[in-house]
Amino acid sequence: GRRLDDLLFGPEAPARLLAVQGLFLVLIAVRTILSPYPKLAGAPAGLFKPAWIVSWLDRMPSRGVIVAVQAAVVAAAIAWFLVGRNPQWRGPVRRATYAIAWLGFLFLAALRGSRGKIFHIELLLVWASLPLVFAPGDARWSDRRPQRRYGWAIRTAIAVMAVIYCMTGIWKLRNSGLDW
Image 1 (cartoon, rainbow, N blue to C red):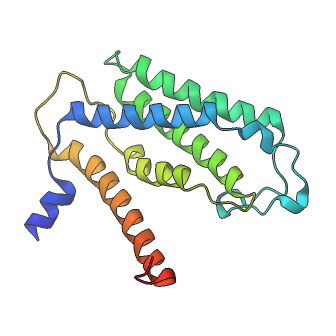
Image 2: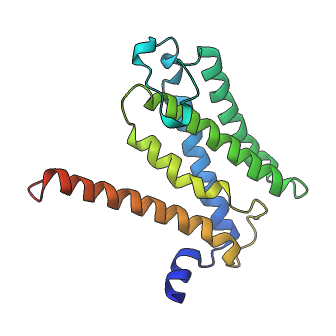
């Protein structure tokens, strides 16, 4: 039991948590900027089959709404990097800006998925970065002493990615057999 606990919730350096969160934010921001989300606006109602996350929508949002969400995601990612230097605001603002960026990206990915095609690269990014939404926001780059408080989020993100890839492989084997 202790070995499993250490494997999933073992100590990590706060600087490593910052690096992982920062890299996830960079990926989220780049995907948000480079993906053609505004082209989703104006889709015919018959082509909109809302994913469960956006099931409250009756049609695809307007281009202005989509662009505003994109801007909020990028602004939140930039704010996460800029505000982290101020110790007074570091914790609460980092957590809030990471959550805003993640929620915005989740919304955009759900809109894209509502067209009937699953974009696996977005889903992997959404689910792997989810544990980091709840990570402590007060980490500093200069702090390299491993602590359990900072390790669980990184290790949970790794476990989420491992489970996703494992389940995908099992599903492929189940449907295609060993000849695959």
